[in-house]
Length: 326
Ligand SMILES: [Mn+2]
Image 1: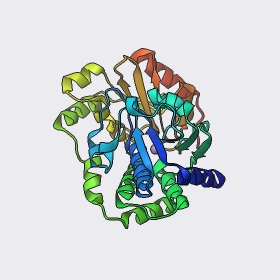
Image 2: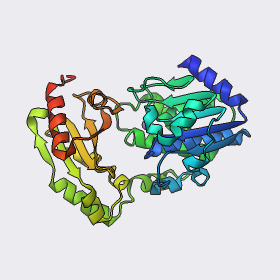
Image 3: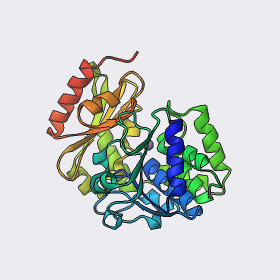
């Protein structure tokens, strides 16, 4: 990691333009790392171009709070063969969608991530599964490059650390994470407003849909599993966009009776996206990987082609076969 950090810093110090991309359906860690790195590089006089592969190219509401979001460009405006490209928070090439082509053609590809299921892509893989977030690694990289971190960059990086640590609650929150967060908070930005936008900004339409999803919660004791689901029809009827229901898992996972929580959400293509959380005793990252997905030990996901009943069945079977970690 130290050697990779030095090499990445050397490449970014010497670059005139850096193309930065993050994964499809970006969360605050992905966009925070992208925009944080971009703001830092721009403050050094480096040109940057930033994108993510959603089509239609729409930003989540909270992202409008992140400085620099207005400079994000759709994939069609991203360079086809950038001399230097950075990916943020992206565990596999397919998560880059249409931006994967640029990644494959990039001269140098700095691959910054903290997902344990990452194989280490790019010419410079900067991967640390012990880091709380990609933003924490970007912070380290900025320190390695040297110079002042602009307030805008600090705000973006802070957003990613807050969200990926579950507001400093999760296992991956190390003393070092808190020190980095404290250093970022020395900068001038409205952290309380940022937290409100990230966590307390639901529409009542979503709250009603949450009620529906919670009324469907099922417990499967033999699989140590609690789960619920939403179909496309549910979302349409409620007038809620799929990404608006991303935090539903955080309510379901509080169920005391099960170690693993799953939210199964139908996608536009009809497949079901399975989001998994474990309290401690199951490696859901390994389970997600076995189904072609990925993630962390306690938070992971994959997409199933087997319909709702099939998705539940295969998940229950996998959990029953999986050894408990305790
Ligand atoms: Mn992350």
